[in-house]
Length: 138
Image 1 (cartoon, rainbow, N blue to C red):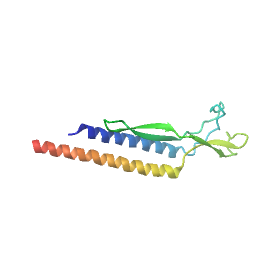
Image 2: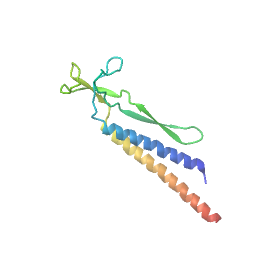
Image 3: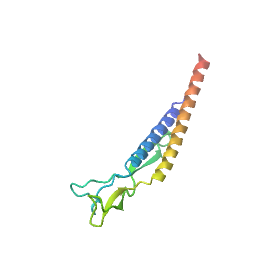
Image 4: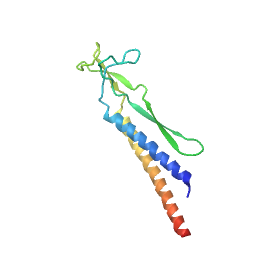
């Protein structure tokens, strides 16, 4: 049994799960507009803030194997959108909208799903090899 390979596969599963959660949050909140923030990045009192889109970065944990996922605000997290009918539109008729590209989110979701499946297959293979090793020694 190789605990390092199990740990590596589990970290991959957790990282892809974080990616999928972030993608789902972005898609679910793609229409959650709010007031445009001022120059200091603050929304006026009583005005709703727009959902801020996020990205996920997956990085190696070093020589020990495995990966870790970190959720960060997208850059930019919101974009100005014309919606003069909105009650929180500014004088120019603009609101803040989440910076979410649904097409890119869908591509990211398919990629994360494939990576999740690959890590799950590796974990199942390790499990099968461990069971066979136990059966050989029994």
